[in-house]
Image (cartoon, rainbow, N blue to C red; front, side, top):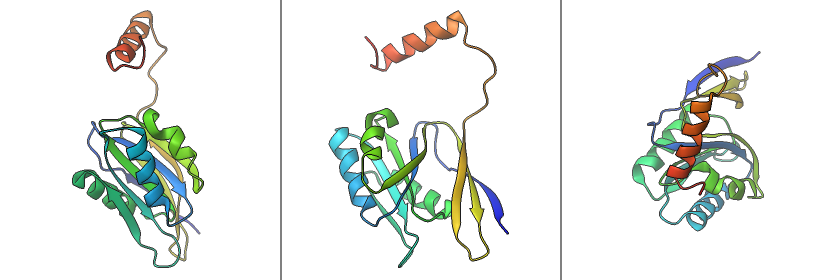
Length: 162
């Protein structure tokens, strides 16, 4: 038997999240190195839930608020070998490929600034795993010409297009 839970990630709108799964205790150090080496001035906090041995939540970061946010959310999700990176002054696109290339990273569930709900299954022994995420809202229709113009202007405004 499984107990299914829907856990809301607690974060403000201006904070980006990368939620993933890894498999080794050095995940915390490797994530830290990737973040600071890829985006000068990034503000972040990260947490990783061990699923064997001491089963502790390991955390690091250079922003105390974001580090505490990562710790609290990973404790609430409670799924082994999961990690969360919360960041400001950067976007997931700035670090996502580098994170995916960390040898112990298995998968990424989401990378977003949207509201996120995590679908968690718990077995009778108390183990937990992430089944998936709900990232933001459902589409309300097709993009119009004015929507296209807004998207292109926005990408230029934030420096991703000329």
